[in-house]
Amino acid sequence: GQQLNQSPQSMFIQEGEDVSMNCTSSSIFNTWLWYKQDPGEGPVLLIALYKAGELTSNGRLTAQFGITRKDSFLNISASIPSDVGIYFCAGLNYGGSQGNLIFGKGTKLSVKP
Amino acid sequence: NAGVTQTPKFRVLKTGQSMTLLCAQDMNHEYMYWYRQDPGMGLRLIHYSVGEGTTAKGEVPDGYNVSRLKKQNFLLGLESAAPSQTSVYFCASSSRQGAIYGYTFGSGTRLTVV
Image 1: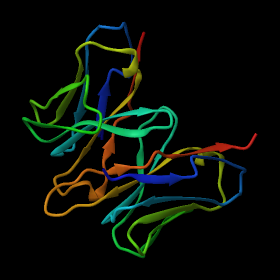
Image 2 (image 1 turned 180 degrees about the horizontal axis):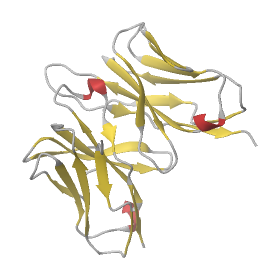
Image 3 (image 1 turned 180 degrees about the vertical axis):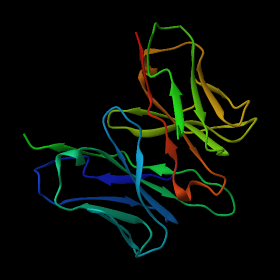
Image 4 (image 1 turned 90 degrees about the vertical axis):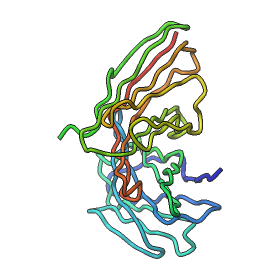
């Protein structure tokens, strides 16, 4: 079946640093979504992308829909402590019928000790 | 503005016991989903429903059953719990227009099977 490869699996951040993560697939997707999961909570939608090449921002977060439609990137600028959590990418390939979201395994952001 | 509500939030079961997890949504969504989340495994789809009275298997359906008798509720059942079913379970829902607008998730049920 379709799979998403999300990297890195985990990373440590120091306040003020910029953070980058990405998601790749061997399949084409029509929609890319990025979610954040805070500890003890369910994932919450951050950004949705619908067009190849699209660049969308939400505050300090910027996400891009790759030109090949097989990848997506999420950048966080000037990270703050509340950015810690797990970030999931999700892709959707739909034709004439409802498809299900495919989720990456997540990137866990932690604070540098 | 409840969104998706899951009950219970925590549960400890003994091996072989049964239980039902309840998911309720108040957004009039057509589609509902059950996921499990395990460390390093991401979110794996157990079962889903595209409407009242319909259910379908996801990626990891074995050991679980579901029912969607009412549009707003989606029940996940474990008939005979096993330690391998220790996990955090998430319910989600989406509109008929589909997942292009993303799923809305509940806050999860943490289940431990001993």
